[in-house]
Length: 352
Image (cartoon, rainbow, N blue to C red; front, side, top):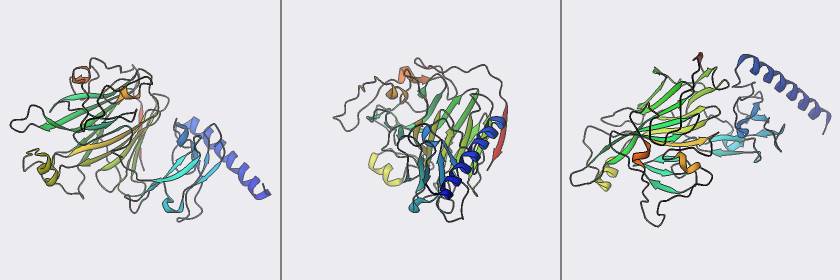
């Protein structure tokens, strides 16, 4: 290693250590020039200052293991983690875990990927097995219920004449953690317009407004749960976001309508004045126990064996009786595990 590289290495280490100390003292840790304060090893890195506005972003990895203190640079095909001018292009995903790599990926829910919930509604579990769960029109069901996390879904739907069951879609999510509740929902829309936001977000009853410029990001730091941070960022200009609750979950969520052709093919018989806007989503969990429950959550149990038939076009998963909650904001299903801790709520809000 040449002398300039040695100097750069030790300067970077000193800066990182300084930032770690500052982060511990202030309870902060995000953005350029600061340590990204996430529990997941893959995102535990220090973002280096930019050489210029066009150079690929570079990081110094801090995760323990073979990637510790290694430099990673984004590919030229996706030089930014958060593309600003065109959010539909691929972003740079930095992985400081044992993979120690950077890759280009679309920043939206992958309906074929693990932990996804899309369509009417179709799940892909943590075990990779695809299944359908109908629930019920107007019902609320626990998707995930664990010691520190509860995610409920509210279903909308329709039942055409002569059909014995509802067609259903997920209209809203309620994510409960510590003493907080994050609600992400699709607004009722009579006529769909891709350029109009049909997404509504609330934290503890207060509306969250995500900026449309800069990083298009909103964040909040609370002093519970080890200084847990909530970050919500736009992944497209409208109707698509990533919500991160540090140490618990990342959620890619998109609002989408039922199109006329889809309505005709499946014979949903939807009313003309309702586009049936609903959510497509994909979850990535940071920390789940071995006894996690929920329609989706149980598929992450280490010894879980799916009961659904994989040799049919629409494998069905039951469990409406085990996972129905009395409301979107309740964790009272028969198999629910989540309980609110008795902690004070001290919150500081900022937006980027």
